[in-house]
Length: 582
Image (cartoon, rainbow, N blue to C red; front, side, top):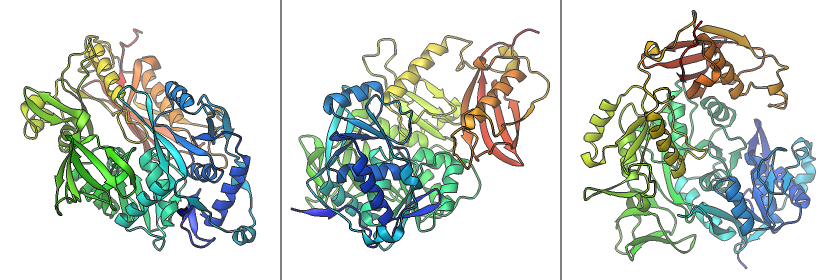
């Protein structure tokens, strides 16, 4: 029987994680795994919904140790959970909050494990890394097929180990590096699962337990983590970090995936973090199979013994960790360095994203790459409606975030990059694209965005209607545009929020700002809509906050919240109604 160790850490004292700024040893990790495995209730399948990356990883190992199987669905919507129950009727949910909304029998991670002052000498004496059967099923990961029903994909311990070892070799990360991986992506997503959980375990390195989201959180996580350190992120997070301004802590490696990454953004990220950036290509079905140095080349290089072949007009990945040939959903151009063994290739977009207009073909992926490469574009995504949308004209659209550009400027740039038949109609400007935690834009989200835009276009009072200016909207400005306030330590929203080190929730901060703006323009809060917002720095209770805001010619509000001379939030709001008559 072929086996692989659960972790590659060679000594009990070796650091496997950093949590709340403190190192956690491999011996302590295994002790927590055993303790959790002994407490898990009956049931063969466990949905691991822990938000804390350390809790998730202990949960993953405990589930595996105890002979159970992890379930990692792509979404936790009620319908997805109902389908999950049809797949595994004995499924339970492991989470680290008492109010988890997932409709499964709940088991809360024993938080007392975090508080145990363990006997380090006893843990060291018991340190023994278990060997896991390579054929053991670790998890079922799920993708949504064309019908929207989750499709399960089995992952064995052997395939995961081979995949991660090949990726680690490509990244130059092994047990001698002592690298810590910091992820802005959730561990439940395949990219986060491989790069921030399995990679440190299988390569003998460490991971950061948090999931920093806002720029200030990412900067803090980097600053609190010793070097060498690697940031595992997405294009949307990298753009946000670079746009926030200020000096970024140096990293030793950047990993990026989940959405198109432009060469310009890759170059900026490498300069900002003083680190090389590798973009990862893969899928839920295949795992990570290729990388490229995006700042230097468009060519992808396969990792390990994986190969890609063309058969029956489809591209198939096989070899290495891939246990059976798997069809890829992308249009690929193979670059054969060795006849019959292609090791490099170019991507030309998803096969399902190929579009044909007036006899000319392109892909959504290619168009997204071109629009995101335009200077001044912060984020953008093309969308082609399905033929089954009777109320929507089947016409190529593009959602775009470009605060310094207008439609004419974007269209002019696009004309130089794509054929005129692929120019979007309409081009829809937004304050931000509603990407999920993994940086992706689900097709259903784009569909809803377009339907909302088309519905509002005929309604002059809607938030997306072009107001022109304040007078045209009937908005009467009250005198003064500065507001100050203090959020006291006994505010009910702070209860249980980072005990011992209270931080004002961002939603509370923005709610006060929105109310102040509404009052200033003699509107109700319901008549103001938040647009793009960046939370730049944590706020402690008792700090005096000041809000400053200005009205732009297009009827949008730009605002900034400060305390003690530092900016803690910056964003925009849209005024949606007519001012009350006094």
